[in-house]
Image (tube, helix red, strand yellow):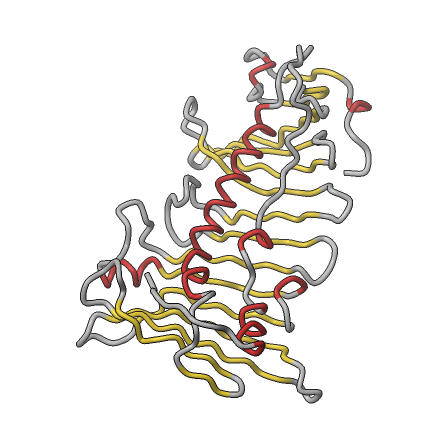
Length: 296
């Protein structure tokens, strides 16, 4: 979208350090054992779906932050003590469109940065500016900060600079890297599918010792229901989940499962036989709850 070059000052770098980079907001779901396993009860399909959902969440984060990366190495056009402006530039991908980025910082009583605001806007003159991305960040550096980022697909659509596969509603990221666990969420509740994900408020918590929690949803192509999952896992990839199926006004749940690091189910408590290993026989109780990993 932007094109530019030049050198960045130390103060310019300080502004960019407040903006999170892609890898700082990525979901990390352990892959578990890569060896071929013969599972006595069956494979942990829900956990396999958690791993693919994590990949889709990371792709969504990357898409949202791609706009920021486009200006990360561009020299600011205007510098002030507590602000930076980039542009306006001609959008090299969309004729007749201008793009501008503005960032402000606020200092506390000790002159330490505590709050930053960042906006990338676009305009198709003679029309006015519309925000394409905006963010609010707290603390001097994103590596230990808290913040939010919104990508305004609705404004990209209005300006005619959206991609055919883009949604037409805002997508929001919230993150907190100030303590353990470090959390990130992708809120897609304003509309329908985006980034290969259905409408849901996806959330992830990652702990320093490698264990974590992921809340997500996916459509069940067989039943047409939406499966909503809370999954807990350790650093080795073993874990447990609780899920329910929303089928219109009918909600089937809760279903509980556990699995080992090899991706094999070790325990199933499924009153509705939603788990394939139950073979349609309800209620379904398989394995032993004592096999569930501790500490989750």
